[in-house]
Image 1 (cartoon, chains in turn blue, green):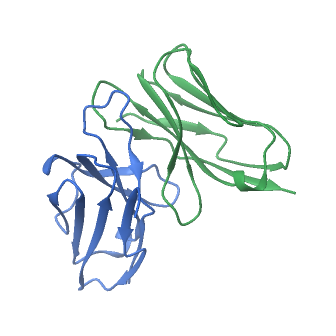
Image 2: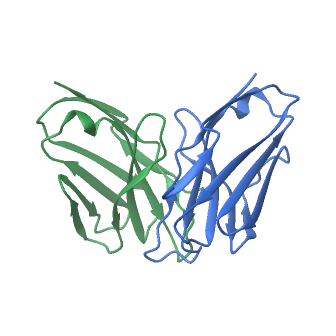
Length: 115
Length: 111
């Protein structure tokens, strides 16, 4: 595997279900990100982890719960979601959160549909 | 919050034509990035710009960091069908890695 991978690629869940999204990066990076992409809206940053520590929570509802057990893996645990949470969820990674010439690389996303 | 305005929102062009799109902001950015997203995939980084006035090429793609630091332009020369997709600009202020994304330009190429 190379780059950033995400599983599953598609997920349909009911509002009472609990599910998890998984992201894995094979780039040796230390920072990982969750974004939400809804139709006709800019990408919305949800969470940032740097060296396994959460450094940003962009006022995300508690029904989304991130977990970063190590620098290569990032999870997004979902429970009691609403239909408006249906979107493409993208994971990204970068060397760290210092910026400079270090850019973010994205996974293919998980298309989530909440019924 | 910061907002990036991309134009046009969508465009239909014929194969072989050149394409121009731009991204503007009311805030100053110190980095401009251009990504392309194919259907069902995540954004892929095309070009990164770090200096006002910088002009950078990647094959048939050329991007420029506006001299005012509030805009950036992307040009695609001699478009081909695989150029179809959504092109996003993204900008960064300060030194941290946090990005602000534009709403995208959807490009469709007809034969």
